[in-house]
Length: 447
Image (tube, rainbow, N blue to C red; front, side, top):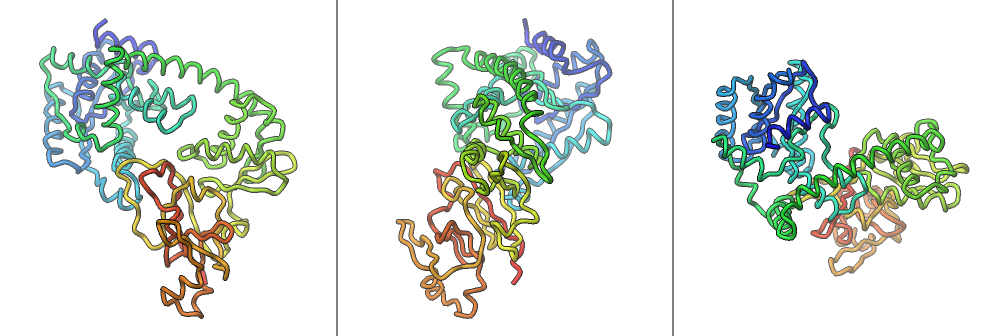
């Protein structure tokens, strides 16, 4: 089966495109997206759908305009409607403190969404292929993942389709060469400073040297895992109705859930957090394990979660609800604070803002409080671990006596990680070994 037949088979088998659908192709000008556009353009008559393409200039490379010009020329040659947009990734990185890759992804999909809504497209086709899937599996495995992370890219996710998913990079390049179709090369793909590129250029080739079909086998494994996950998801659906219930402005995980199989119990905890947060990103096994341990604690014990959520041991289970209306338990009422946790990625820029700080989550965890400073507080002031009483630190920094009581701090017990607006301690700062980042953003301190 050649690559065109394989893509057609995938579209039909997984019902990716229906008769009459309007499909927008994400066209970078690189080999993968060029291959996708060419094949979909050839199949559109046979399968009765319409194809257009959109190129987005991220403004990150000098040759970016060459890619845009080539993409436009290709669409003209194929008779395909063409869209173009330019985004300012660097400004968004500075504003949101994201990695360049994550910032680009967010802005890119925002632009696609605008065009799709404006001109009535049903589907966005992206050129993810088997190598992308294998790289993501390895990345997730190295960081720690659940079952879902073993099938990280699917054929369809909402209105996004990936018809090239079972196709390898080598097959894509061979197809384009056999058809005499040129494409653009992105020089950043050869940069091993990026984690994904290191996996692409160093790890995958070593796996292929062990078995030349390693990438195909990983893609097939992801298929099997995805099918199994769907079955497990249905099983958890059944238990959710019994063991998770709405509880005021949050959700309660009922006591009996702890007696279920460990996978089902953890899946229920994850679902309760997701429901309360209205988001899934940045909810990790650390948070799930923390909630799990609360079941063995006395009533009233709490832990704090991303998206300003609090988990609390109740008489009949563990509740997950927003902190709003009860911030005095953890955050002094004179402080307006937002927190979030997320995985550290290569290229992330640590914010240099007085009231927004990043901490190593594995060190600070969710046990901190935000409160006024106290006389017996201390802070780690040396990288070697040396500590100092806050009263001595204030003296060293020449803070007037009558002003010291006005300072708030982020602390666990009497150990201070940050005197807000003055100084961070050395022990919870971001390092090369940091896996998960906790961001604390102080919007306002009312004195």
